[in-house]
Length: 612
Image (cartoon, rainbow, N blue to C red; front, side, top):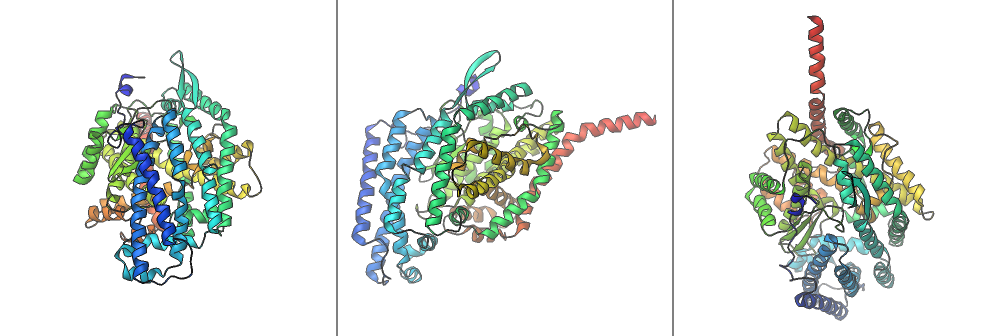
């Protein structure tokens, strides 16, 4: 480990409890379990379950307000404790005490997950419009109640819902936990600098940023070999998780798992079709970028392991203190509130930045409690890593704006979960470009376009893969070779001739944890929505900062289409999504021009000499 890596910060969790083995934690654990038991008793006492239509009298209003107040209180208490434990597990999956406590906590609080179905069924028995008229609490939770009413139409019988939610702990939830543990503990023996080292998967991926192509190729081959070693349990997990999702969607009356996912993300098919049509139309533009990248590297075509290769030596090494200063400055230039949030995150040690074995391989932002967050990244001294850090701090800013909402009001769909993060990342990447010289602009444009390619093209490959997976999974389990071919076919469709077809990544479906949990289209949605909002900001939209903060605060209280309409955005129109992609196209054109400038100068010089 380098000196700079050893100095990278670890987050401070002691502000919640002194430690996961402390008496204070044990007391909090028992308190949360007891709170869940008391909430179940309250549901039983008040008859919170499907009934005949219930008159909206004073007693019903009182019951509703009592139940929803207690429901919110318990969700907040349980949520903080669960995220507290999860942070220990994600920072070090080898922490057996944290793993044990997380398993015990999930088991002992599992009745809470079963109460949602009961509450939805009870809401279906109410005249919600009349309830709104008689209760300010109901009006404040109008969107949640509207969604509960819709969910209630897709409930199985109470007994079936209870069994499904309880069995998920030993089904999909257990498989997801296995995936997380396996991937975070997966190591690879690889020779670097004449020494054989045991590297984590994130450490191996870091080597795919090495300037030496032979090193990148060895790292790629080592990663492929590592995924092959754990293919059997990960393929079994994917089959089990997606099989359960598909079965439950069918039993709950959804036309397909995708329809269930669209509902959870608060969008409709028209919106998704508009988004995906614009994304597919943009594939040729991303291929232009990748071909220009190949020219910059002096390659005829990129291999998968060239996607992150550095384009020459950057003149600037972005130490963590420099990244901190730059992010705080750029966030502060946008608004004092955003800059203050960033400074607070650094000062109060919200960030765990050191790459190390046992730490989950994905960058993440966590809401911890109230307006406080935690951020997990694998920091390297590059501008790409600065972008990632800014992205995750954007999640913290979203949480800050949600802090005044109740847990039931702040349930933002995945389609809106990436809005603030991508907006903040764009602030930093655009500021970096403005300050860079010609060579550095290539490096910074490349960092921005790498992220855009991940969120648009790679996400599209996952969508194509997942769509095909659900279609085939209806007829039985899918085996490794079939899944690999499906992944390669999706990559060929998206990347086309911009990547070497013999050097793709057939195990991408194993490497991204999100594929085990949900559809990935929300990443493209979040990127392009954020770019649309950034365009409003750059164009001087009136009161943008105030309206933007209100939008973030309301992401769990209105549908994405309604929130976007506040800024004149129609998310059901392909033209809106194309306008976001136009921002990326402009960067691609700048990148191509910068990459090809030396060749054009040389051609002009040769032409001039020929004339002379």
